[in-house]
Amino acid sequence: MTTLKIKDLRSRIEGKEILKGLSLEIHGGEIHAIMGPNGTGKSTLASALMGHPKYEVTDGRVTLDDEDLLEMEVDERARAGLFLAMQYPSEIAGVTNSDFLRSAVNARRGEGNEVSLIRFIRQMESKMKGLEMNPEFSHRYLNEGFSGGEKKRNEILQMMLLEPKFVILDEVDSGLDIDALRIVANGVNELRSPDRGFLIITHYQRLLNYITPDFVHVMMQGRIVKSGGPELAHRLEAEGYDWVKEELGITDETAGQDA
Ligand SMILES: Nc1ncnc2c1ncn2[C@@H]1O[C@H](COP(=O)(O)OP(=O)(O)O)[C@@H](O)[C@H]1O
Ligand SMILES: [Mg+2]
Image (tube, rainbow, N blue to C red; front, side, top):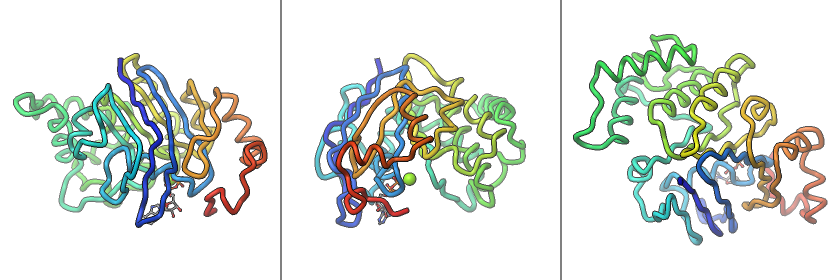
């Protein structure tokens, strides 16, 4: 069974420690949500797991199915089935969306096992239809001139084509109107499977009305400080984070908030 195990993870950016001993274990079939104030390190966690070179991991262990993730190069992590839908997807001029997606799919499938062009296009078109994306988006340069919502749908399109083992969605709901949110959530729910795990990072509980998580975690000061079920997300939405801080004796000076 697929398992992502994060143990006492510490990570720095430009010399500043952001993740301060974060532990979390996610099994196949489970959806975990992380909520937390701005600047607590949620995106840092996503980037550190993917192996972004700017995020230096100084301590801790991360394994994906007992393989040491931290030892792997970025492309090896992707090939091992880790996928991140980014909070701020990058634009790449001169590379069409469909070329980008096809090389990502082929990189994941490995040499000698590439998908044929015809088959790929058929798959891409059918997924785009499901996401109610205009077919012209396949010929446009990657994310260039896409609106916030279009970029997010495009991230979900990538996820659906790559069929990853382990999915991290970083604020995938930001910039989406209610219809787009429902479409994106349907895409995620369609991929729910006993051998696939999800980590959903979100600011707002509303996404969790469409994707029901098994576990909800609160992240503060670079750690998971509280865990519960879906009811925890409802309470955070209604009451904010102050009660958690009070419960744990965290002051604003130490909470690591920037907004
Ligand atoms: N590229 C970067 N350069 C410098 N500091 C950064 C960078 N990315 C994030 N940080 C800092 O790291 C902290 C955590 O950021 P982030 O992980 O994006 O938080 P969250 O996603 O929880 O809002 C913040 O204080 C932020 O300013
Ligand atoms: Mg973030």
